Image (cartoon, helix red, strand yellow):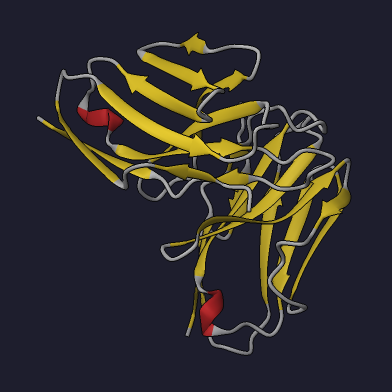
Length: 113
Length: 115
């Protein structure tokens, strides 16, 4: 069935290094993706989104790359900080005609000082 | 700006009891979503509303679950009767648009424990 999934459940990096979190999706018609960050005891927080007419989008210290050919997207975090430690989800929101919101299982990012 | 507000933050009750979770979406947002999060299943969409109308409730586990949105600023999720397997964190989220291509803004969730 249609799914959005993550490659690795955990990622550990050294403070200051760059982090890359990957995500695969199965629906070739998917046209919008969102990355969320979830800290312990809190709800998911929007980080960045990308539409299918783009292959790259940059925010503050974050970049999302979309490869529609292989149905893959990634979140890159530059100069990772301890405050970046959290679970990261890629997601597709519900659509009026699809009605499903699909979240991946999440990648736990741990930043070592 | 006030975000999505959920209450209560924590709920502990005995099985068989009715549980009511509450959500106030961000003002002006047209869509509201209820999610359940567990270690085993991750984030699951239960139901979502657009302009107070339920659009898709196929994620609602069974008839014990019901959700209402009587107006644009309030929604409830009820479980009656509750069972231990309903224990989870329940999130409410809202988004500005009804078409879907908008990020969702989440509340901090209600942690529900059914004994």
